[in-house]
Length: 213
Figure 1 (spheres, one colour):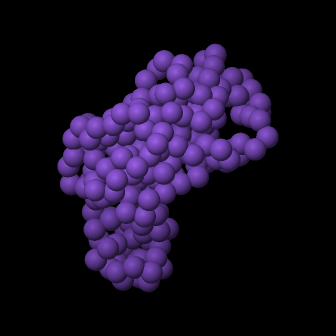
Figure 2 (tube, rainbow, N blue to C red):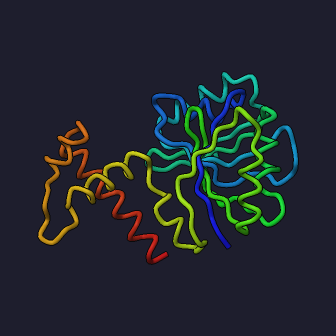
């Protein structure tokens, strides 16, 4: 089996979920689970990192939200159940990416104008699915390879944590002897050294935890 990590974007795909992702006070929106029924009003369970107050405001103000509830929260991370009226593209993508042998692996990460997700299936089915996208829906292939469980280990990181970790790695932070410092990484990323240290510590904890889970 093969996998494709892909970013998908296109017009007319706005939803309460993409609105959450576009909100400045919200750092990350991920789909953890979704109802399997073929419906124009899907139900999602999301993890949302950021201001819980803004999460409530966005969902209360959206005319497309039919029901929602914050079912739990911890350390700046809220777990949200939401049912909403989805644009046609959402239903089309669901069918396109679950046809034949294809399976969408969660979590999927939402951005203001796109979603990043991993699809597993045979090479033939993956090729057919992505070759038959209609005009107007853009796909950017981020990663391809032979499927194994370990491909998801890095996806629990926030986008910012991944950026800091990648920059640190490329600058030699994990070389022996170490070839850079928090200050140098901070200069590269235009942030404070303490911010670099905080992001690296959280990222390292997530990755080490994934090894022993």
